[in-house]
Image 1 (cartoon, rainbow, N blue to C red):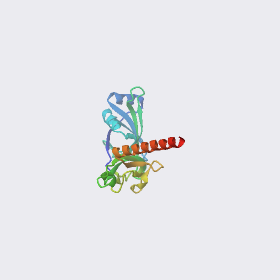
Image 2 (image 1 turned 90 degrees about the vertical axis):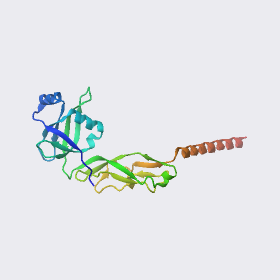
Image 3 (image 1 turned 30 degrees about the vertical axis):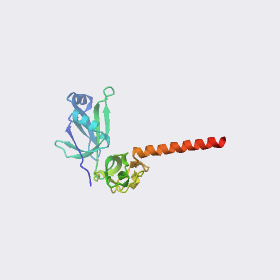
Image 4 (image 1 turned 180 degrees about the vertical axis):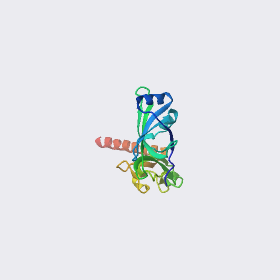
Length: 215
């Protein structure tokens, strides 16, 4: 099931060049350009506050947006570049690339964990450690999964969930070429401390036996 694609509202920008771009910034907007997808480039501008909010939310360069410009058809885009002021580190220009439904893109997909209450390891006092709450996948723009799910219901203390054990949506694949960890069931702190004490005791016993042998 494809997830809901967030809207990115922009305005058409008539002027081009450095002078027009400076005027756009004076008006509290960030100039940008939309290109690719077999169509001519289009100049746009995004309200500064809107863009800042999106940037602070994170993953701006890896999020597929539905670009809405008044008087134009909506189009799916992904940001390819955000230019910033070298002193203030504020956005000064954005480059957006159009995507077809068949285009392949890298996006971060949320992970949903199911069956935590049924997991034997959790019942025994273990706790879930989430290493990756979202996973970067290469997906088709027209079929973006809303999430991927991980079943924890059979996991014991010490068990680990890796990407290879997860059923990914058809056509999706990880961008990382290794079997990375998504989550694990960790031992309760009291059990871990008890194990440490036992290890230390065994080590002390070993030292005592070695000392007795030397005597």
